[in-house]
Length: 185
Image (cartoon, rainbow, N blue to C red; front, side, top):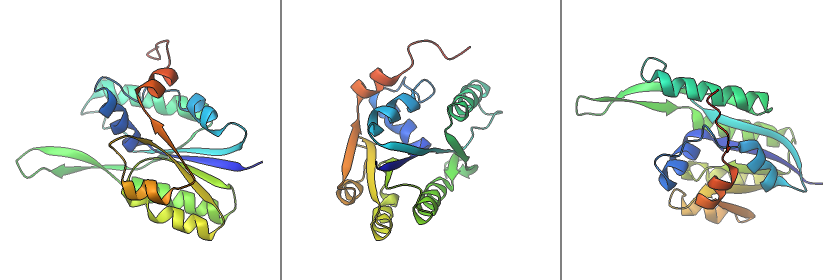
């Protein structure tokens, strides 16, 4: 039985969800159920979710919702890898907060697990072209890489190098795997 590990680029996933409907968020998405759907008939080894925590003082409501999401993911056995969020000047006098280290932390975890022979297939939830070198490394280790991606938010070069399997996440998938009951409690 093939062993599979899942690597979720949390920020990329959120932007993909929002590209389908600006009111959607990842807070109520059932990652575990969707991953089980994608990985059936294979042995699920690990799930990693890489994200930077929101700043509590900037938006207390969103911060609380994200903390509930991260707590739920941890309870479901998903490994949460936290990165940094840094303040940046936009050049017009305004500031924004950008995630730093997320791609490199995800890539390093995938490489480490491949090197330690923990999986046969890596399933990447991202369309970020920065990940294009990963399938090449995995192939050298005798591993395969699949991706789950959002249309219009995926580098074609990544789709090309991940020729094993690709799963499109669209509105139908999102609606099928959103929690129907409120998680605000």
